[in-house]
Amino acid sequence: MRTKSLKKNKINVITLGCSKNVYDSEVLMGQLKASGKDVQHEAPKNDEGNIIVINTCGFINNAKEESVNTILEYVDKKEQGIVDKVFVTGCLSERYRPDLEKEIPDVDRYFGTTELPLLLKALGADYKHELLGERLTTTPKNYAYLKIAEGCDRPCSFCAIPLMRGKHVSQPIEKLVKEAEGLAAKGVKELILIAQDLTYYGLDLYKKRNLAELLENLVQVEGIEWIRLHYAFPSGFPMDVLDLMKREPKICNYIDIPLQHISDNILKSMRRGTTYEKTTKLLKDFREAVPGMAIRTTLIVGYPGETEEDFQILKNWVEEMRFERLGCFAYSHEENTHAYLLEDDVPEEVKQQRAAEIMDIQAQISWDLNQEKIGQIYRCIIDRKEGGYFIGRTEFDSPDVDNEVLIDATQHYLKTGDFTMIKITDATEFDLYGEPVQA
Image (tube, rainbow, N blue to C red):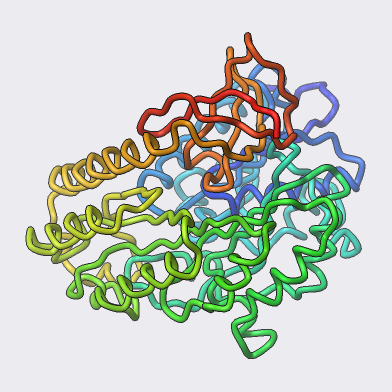
């Protein structure tokens, strides 16, 4: 029979899923630290604490599987007496709590995405309203995520986000500016703006799409040198943002705009509110407004009813558009979404083959674009040292998903968190190599 450990309580927060979850974990840890709790993020296995909080993802099958496996791993450790308590929060818990409580009853308690005060209470801490914007950041010291809105009002047929995160709720500009000032005071130089939909920002609070006004306020924050935009929606994009991007050096010439597909048949079934023609024109307008900007997108293949013709349209379009960055996912049939009513009729092996074909096309495009960078000089931020290299990024690259710039650490010394001018000397499909030069 297992016995309660005699260790002093140490809380270990484990984050699965997207950058929005990272942000939520950071807020949780900030609150715990303010209550005097010993809290760590993804502590090493030999010192991972006796109270585990798992912040889960419930977006697609692979993510759900990873979340369930992580829960089971720590329930097993609880049975062995290695940890005392296991709490589960986040999207999977929000979406499937009754099923989880039935299937994995040894978890001490499950919490939804909006139950931070209840989770804190279970951990012996009080929710402190005065800590709005205070977080214990887990990213390298030079960049941080800034969540400008929660939830989503879009009706996309394949997406379960509204089920887990609710309706779109924008954060007030003054609150976000205060949060940015706090991050800058801690040494953060790059803000990565995140939301389920940046395009929609402000409609609920200010009765207009207000992303540009938010950006104009954020660029005034002393110490912030780069601001990066993630997860914009193509329909209704506020074009005044592009004018600001072009004239304001702090706003990276970069945007992450998930487009999902381009065949009109699939776009209509996906309820995306756009067409092949409109989307193609939007991208052309982006590149005309901000020459040289990097556009990242994500695509879904194998959606119900996707024919070979639909897929060929998508392939041809990817070749034509030459995206700087692109990710591709096989469709996941999600309960309680509109598309769940459709027959999931594309075989799994066909989905995977189509995703591989898209990524092969993108690898060649990325190779070609990166070869053009050889001999060019870019201002890079240095994120970390890893093995024999310092790892940096240009303004056209977001952490974890895009190109990295590798600088030989045996030949050059650089300081993490600093901006450095780097001359690109070599390139592969997804990495650049360079050396520092005098500005």
